Length: 327
Image 1 (cartoon, rainbow, N blue to C red):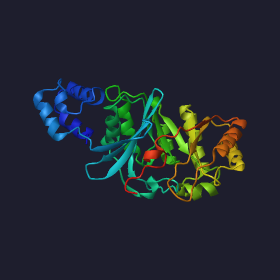
Image 2 (tube, rainbow, N blue to C red; image 1 turned 90 degrees about the vertical axis):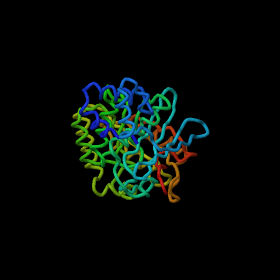
Image 3 (cartoon, rainbow, N blue to C red; image 1 turned 120 degrees about the horizontal axis):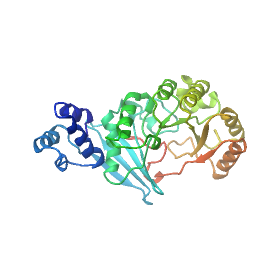
Image 4 (cartoon, one colour; image 1 turned 30 degrees about the horizontal axis):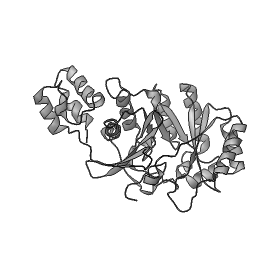
């Protein structure tokens, strides 16, 4: 596994430009072996090969339509995570994981059924992008994989800065998105970062009673607190927020839920992204297409901008909510 901290430690005693050369080789030339980094002296290449290997242990599976590739990555301690590459038109988006498992226990999410094992390091986060970038050009990155990004805040932000760094991966901040279930302190910290990443907030219900049934974290961060943090984020960044809403048949897809959600979001600089449920638990079913259309029509009739998430990789269990190693 690529160890960025070890790389920087080794190069600390070298001339400054050596680190720039190493980053160029790693993030832009996308070498898979330090011997390919010919700008570095042979002795240094040998040291890096021994102390900072570039191999990433993984297994790939690709959907029948070729649009989605899921990667099972085995970490140095034996833990495993999944990351996904989604191909759509000219975009190549990597869905990145940030934790092994998740502590939040959202009832519709397979990762939540794993429980929490540990946070990923900065290097383990960045490695997921590198792995796919070595195969084809990556245009976008979304922190929507396993775990809650804002509960691994420091490592996620450090990884984003490496991915955004012109001397690193050089990915534009506006091509990077962070999705949270509404970790209020994290949203408030992110507002102060002066970093133009995109923020997505998962509501999935228009009131506290229903949201608490689906997302236990609502007991700690109820809707009012989440939306106050979102309002402050918008005020400080002037950036539009994506509100994610997973539609579950007979649970949160009624006309009254649509009206309630529209009232909740009215006047806010946001748009709604409707997500079709991908089966992970027997007690839930996806909303029928007609219900989805009506829900969308209701929101749009109330002046909200609404999109529908394209469904990637269901047949290889790579779609939203389906990532779950060992389940």
